[in-house]
Image (tube, rainbow, N blue to C red; front, side):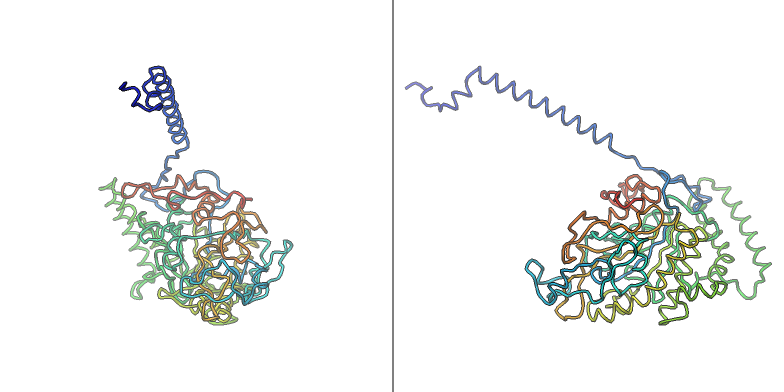
Length: 497
């Protein structure tokens, strides 16, 4: 039998010299094309790669003002942070469908969320009304904040990576759910320093009730030099260890400080390349300056009566009065040129369930109202006061919380569970569009639906407004170029003025 008869037609096709040459030619051409395309992609990636920009930090003056990567609209930033997760559907994200489906359980919504079984859809606990010339719908829970709707740029489509408070605070304030990473304020002061030489570049004003759930991670320096961690104090509790001992006169104190400065400088001359030593001396010298600058800053008695009335330092609950004083302190710090001021409205490292923060898993009508009574008047007064003094021309105000709350109730029928899939934060001041809303959640306020924005995008946008490229602001740590936005984030250009 002829062996060729045992070979299939396809096999005989492959054994043909003519066909072999044709296929080889096509294959070689394909390989050449793949090589050219790969080279083009490599070149494109190389051309789009952005090298880090290291700030030129003088170890002798680590807090000195530095130029950004480009001219930013904002020179300073005030962050008003509300731990516990403010309910967007009860404050600034108006959803008429919640009225329509109140008491029902529409298909498609989960039966179990972070804290267990879900209940039915619940309409907002407070009435929504149109505000300002834009007619923005905001609720009666925060009427004074709502009255400033024409000043705010609302971002309604934020979403985050976690539904747990400690990780949520970490992620929002450091860009990572884990601990040990620099806070937003530390990144900014590392890059830009401060215009104020007598006060810290970064101040965290903690709530009168104490630290938030993630504690000092929210304003820590992580792996950045310790010079750039936030200094935490508030109107009730000044920085520790600044008071002069009673046995030491003011003149003796000044002489001692002068002698120490002379000895430190002499010591530094022996170790000119020791940046840690220089930074430590600079830190001590700043502490010396704070002995005179902080008492003046903390003394609110010189503020006129109408300011105290506007902020509410003598009306409402004791907690509201204390928070109102924190708001005046925040304005005074911004006035003095402090680069980053982080003002907390809420606390409790062990939780709170709506009592010490906004975490309203039960009785939201009572607990959210309690937090709103503390926050609304003083915060609105702070923003108006900044505007009246012209400080919003160069100051960016950020109002934020770590995630939102569900449009349906928990099984207890009185609280809303955590919602990481959509929530609302706001910007105001330098470089931001006024009376503008970006993105949308779905009809129930359950998930980001139109122009979803990550927390990475939010932080990238804030850095951009301060004149910093979030892709180039990095720090080499453990073999990696670390960033606030990790390897993610895009500037939300639509919100820029």
